[in-house]
Length: 549
Image (cartoon, helix red, strand yellow):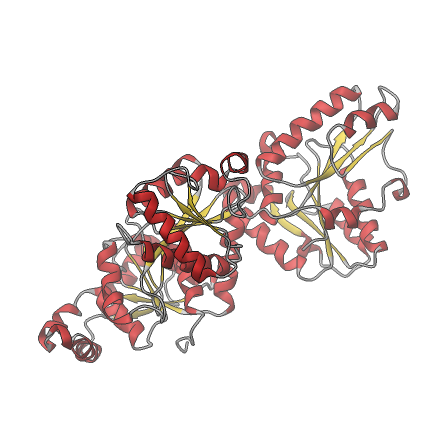
């Protein structure tokens, strides 16, 4: 949504409510329906929110404007943030514009409250209007104080609309305005006291909101998008590792959020007993005994047929089907499930081998590869291949690059593909860099207008400053979104280095290239990782007709 303004002050009793009223009036005069949202409120009734709702003249329910309470933030900041995103998205879908009013600095989280509001603005992907008190400050002091707050917003990649300062009393207004003009923001305004009339505010809030770049995509925002997409067309995912507590805990979350229908492989009494011990509700899951004689015989006969060229007998097939990964994959083959997630206990090879044997690859795709969605503070990147192919050929690298570009598009990431090497452009030679150069040529031949660059070093691919020096005329350098690594050693090492040192969230590995989605977990996967992987698997499955619920 373009018409959003987050009115935020770094302290209490500054006058931000009056500024919010001015923003409301600006939107209303433009003929827009306006909603009001307060991400954090005190327990009980919020009179400020009520006043703003009355000013809109709409029938927005009071509860629709409340995000979470301070108590909820203290209990679980991440969970509270996700609730804020969900409630805001519902509100934003109902109105042409939304005015968001920051919290009131009336609780014990006050020391970090400004930063928390900035993170919320980033999660909501909305621009911020900073409201400052000029009381008792010289013009230079006011500018320095604003710069300090703007640096905090910049840490969260927030787009500031501008600064409004109230209560200027230490110098002529033009001196304050001159100092704030040095901030080079779309709007800087200074008023001598508290606002007495909305006509004192500029009528340009709407044009400002439209003109401000709000392209931030935080990890929480991505997680919300994944959950919404999965819920929109719920699919059935089989989990063969139901003896693992992390799988059971993740399953409970997925079911509670309505992300997917789940099949747990194992004995019902064992699974439900352990769920009870862990305090988990798995009543909505289907539990499938992998020793069911009828299914074992049906699956074994089919496996023997499919692997007849390998001289697999029916008895051998029965033994193979005792492996839960094979049983679960055969459920997908027979249309009893739409996808599978495994790997919390099993190795990558054990997880994907059955799929390679009889699920096979998508027509036109020659190689299965694994990617990660790397969620940085403000954007999401695709890293591939970080999971499957140790030493891909030039042709295989080209296939991985094109498949990864399609993956990026499926997650609303504009693909700009960088094929990585230790050398940029024509600066280096040798077998390794020549292989990447050939892969780039092949990818460009098949990719049409897809922006592709290679060989290119990681710094030149991601950093615009380095790119201007090393590859100034490239449409990819400095702004790559898809990173293709020359081998598994490099890819796996790099994704873990970025994950651990840049505080990034790595979602994956996710397999691309299979006809039906089968995804592998890291054996060190956390519950959030498993939930995200299940959601992505469900989204991948939406490309085909689903299993009847």
